Amino acid sequence: MSAIRRVQQWATFGRMWYLYDAKWQNPFDSADKIKEYISGTHKPIYHPLNDCGDHVVVINSRHIALPGMEWERRVYFHHTGYPGGASWTLAWELHRKDPTLVVRKAVYSKLDKNLLRRGKMARLHIFADDEVPNSILENLSGQIRQLRAVPKRLDHYTDEEIKSFPRIFDWPKDYVIPN
Image (tube, rainbow, N blue to C red; front, side, top):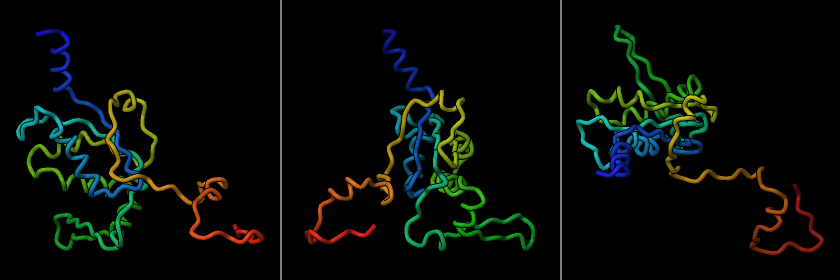
């Protein structure tokens, strides 16, 4: 076996580090994509009993977007184990307490329910903003593509872009567009 072929084979078994930007992404759709990389199903050597997954670094979890009324309707259940220890927390309350928990719980629920799940979750690194420690940035080797494009805010458009935007009808010459 040549040296190049051997290095390619070693890279297949090595754990890669991927970056995923969760800004304006649905965390439950993103969890499907993140699950592929954490469990290793995107690799040609995947086997259900083999733990060959990669590390995934999720940034901007503070800026996730839930569809419709999900912030008010989605409820997370927790029980302490003691009588009367049941509690229900709405998604917006949980997100306000810790911005990484909604994404973490979404990925955790998507993973297979077996003994490998906690080990796979240890390879998920979630950050509320885009500030990542240098020790993690040094390891990054790839990026996972976002599922939907991040929309541009209206106040981020320049005046030239607003004026050059196509209009359905033409304004009269003496009309002044209010700001």
